[in-house]
Length: 108
Image (cartoon, rainbow, N blue to C red; front, top):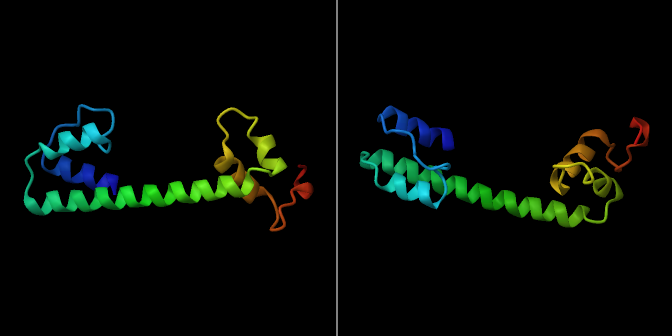
């Protein structure tokens, strides 16, 4: 969806947003000042709403995963690696463990 927004702007030869992120408040304010046809402005607004909704849904899922795995020994062990949070650790465990949560066959 973000690529769609960028594509609309590029097709209209709108210069790159001077702010680090087009999708934060400063970028949004900049975007509002751009001259665009009504249909493309509506499409951009729809894409941004969808992006925001999906980001909120993802944050809820991340919170649920973190809550469910907070006491998991394997998750805590993986979190000792720099940059690995509960979500990343849970993903690693899901990829290498069997459905019962055991990784013993893979050397854990």
